[in-house]
Image (cartoon, rainbow, N blue to C red; front, side):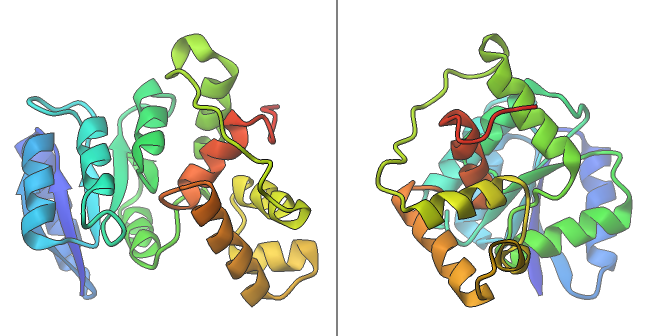
Length: 220
């Protein structure tokens, strides 16, 4: 069973997500939080696989809660899926930099939300929706609307690793990267693992941010 925690300051929203998730045969809600501080406590107590995280919450917002969760002892095991009302919310970019593994809009279809939870639980980042790439590109292009970029050192990467990073930033899976670069899926996975280690990235979502912030990828 995929263990899910729901963090949102609106009780009706939390209740709706709980009903949806509990109705799925392969997942269950293990806890609810009305603010970011409660979300951090939930992760420490129940060790969920995925946290559905709202951004604007009292006491502790979703960005700081995400940062504390992903930098904590369960950071590698618990994935944060940001749920937001706006597709160009500047705070989402901050959440991705804080370690979130992806985000969806709150009006996403139920089956898409469940699929997103399964994607994160399987260890992948939710980067497929084009809105994710638009958001990252938009806020790297306009530094006045985003956090101060953190320089990313790419000199230690091989040429092949740089090529793989470019494909990761386009939202390609390991299998797609393998086909694009004419390498095996196992080799693509190894390159991605090395990128995560060398760039000190939490997961593929942060690799995408790194590619944009280092200007390896230029927003179009």
